[in-house]
Length: 217
Image 1 (cartoon, helix red, strand yellow):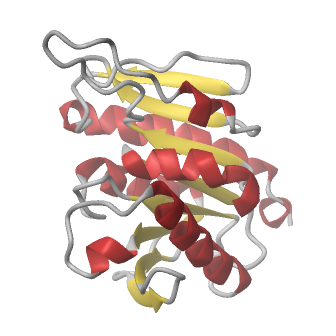
Image 2 (tube, helix red, strand yellow):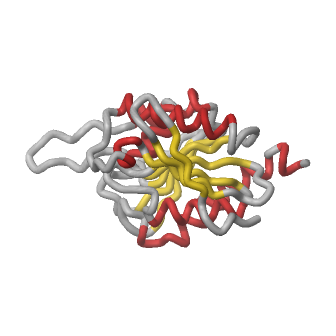
C-alpha cells in the first residue's frame, strides 16, 4: 500500500485558532495514524517522517497535525488544556470526514506524545504511539529531581508503544502491561537510528491493521 505523491493540507478550526493537518492517504487504508509535533518543532521532524513512511507501507493513512500556536508562527507552546482542546477538535473533524470509519492510533513526538496520552480516551483511540516521550525533565544543577510524567502515561487504557532513545536526557519510561518500550540508538531527537524507528512503528501499525475489519474485508 502506498501514499499519494503529496500531502493534502487542511486548515481546521479549533477553539484556540486554526490548526493544520498534513494528510497522507494510504491506498485502501485500514487504519488512521494522527501525530502531533514537539513543543518547539514541527511536522517535519525526522522521527515523525519515519513513522509516517512506516505507517503508509502498512496501510494506515497519516495526518501530521500542527497546533494553532505553530500555525500562528509562535514557538512557545500553548498551555496543556489549549493543546488538548485543539488536538481533539482536529481529531473529531478528521474522524468524521477524511479518516471516517478507520480505527485511530493517536500519537506524537515529545510534547505531542503527552497530548496524545492525555486525550487518548476522549479521542477514542485504539492505540497510542509515543516518539521520545519526555518522561522526566533533566535535573537542574543543585535542584531537586523534577517530577515525572508517569501520571500522563497511566491515563492511557489502550496498547501503547513508546520509541525512546537510549541516551534521552528525559529518561526512560517504564514498561507496563499495555505499554511497550522500544529503545533505539540516540537521544531525544531519535535521529540516531531512524531505520529502527521505522521498524518499530511498522510492526505496531501492522498489528493494528491486521485486526481492522477493512483489512479482513
